[in-house]
Length: 150
Image (cartoon, rainbow, N blue to C red; front, side, top):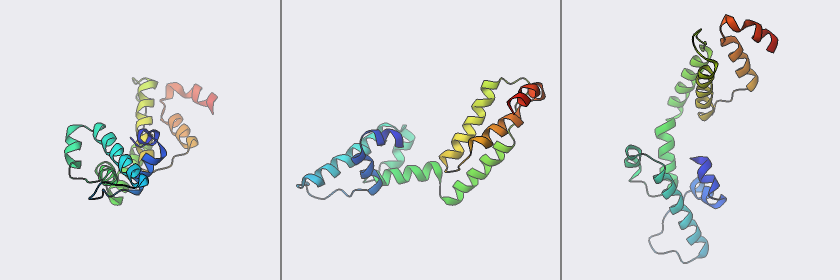
């Protein structure tokens, strides 16, 4: 969603990041009008991107920034929850093993899913480490290929 909101324009993204408090009277200043419109555009974008169960949780929010922060809290959690999720994903990543019956494509989907979740939570993973883990996770029938790649 962050990427999509960013594509709407720099001012739109800035309105979300900096927050905006809707004035009690109609804005007269052109700058104030632009900020008000940007905030409204972001709120609209967020609301249309959510399913009903998530939308209900945001109905009381007054600004786009408030909506955004609540969404981040819902999906990422606070610092302790976020760290626990990262630890769980680290454990899953280290324990990855490809089954003998599994296809490479489905194994790579599992690897990419874990990596994307980790990156989404702010965990930085070097490509070199990912490649090494993938090569280690392959079954013995791929030993010749792994050796040639290494």
